[in-house]
Picture 1 (cartoon, helix red, strand yellow):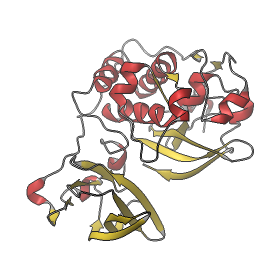
Picture 2 (cartoon, rainbow, N blue to C red):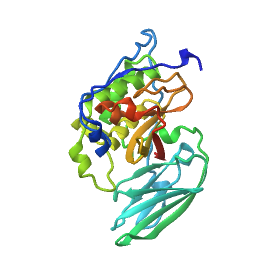
Picture 3 (cartoon, helix red, strand yellow):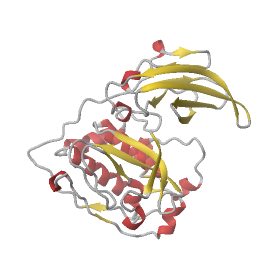
Picture 4 (cartoon, rainbow, N blue to C red):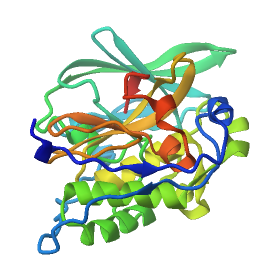
Length: 312
């Protein structure tokens, strides 16, 4: 790859918090990172593609009196669930030797990605019967053949819950309209989130299992935890046509800090976040929690300190 196919954004981090604070809970409060992004060509404008939505189609759904599963959008990379069960409910998505488990919100349609690509999926909805024991409420199978491999990461989902009218989407559209290309837009989202969202240590200390972020709430309050950062960034980038994953895994030299971050994809040349280069035609890591809150590059390393476990 030529030097012209890579761009480097040098982040001038203000180390307000000691690294020990970051190790406590995916980051710490601090001054926002700044970025010396190269100015784009003033004669060109980034044109975001048509908004890709995700919906629950009740007429196409199958199930029983307590749960409905809509598999009518498998070729678009997602399925949806609506549950009226009177007990705690979980969803399991299985493919090959991988299993993804979700908490289901009762009385709300929810979108889930086929993030493991094409093939045979098993979808299980399970109802809590006592303590930590669950019984199978409904099971179905999907033969998935996604038309666009990036579709699961270009649409709303349970972990990136937005619509075309969401405030975060409006803000993303505003940033896109002033961008010269995809890289310029990604840089603007990066800078906006870094400057406007602070890490919420109090929230992190009291977070409960099954927590789901609300990107518009993160935008409104100006604070959140690592999951909120990743969800907001994914919502903003996806809404303007940038394939973006939410990644859960471990980070740091000892690999014991469970954390959430993003990966994005662009066919154009990439840029640098927290001191490691991003290449064209590849999924690239974007960690806004650390960037916004002053983690130094020795902690982040060159990307090898990250262990990806789940992608959404």
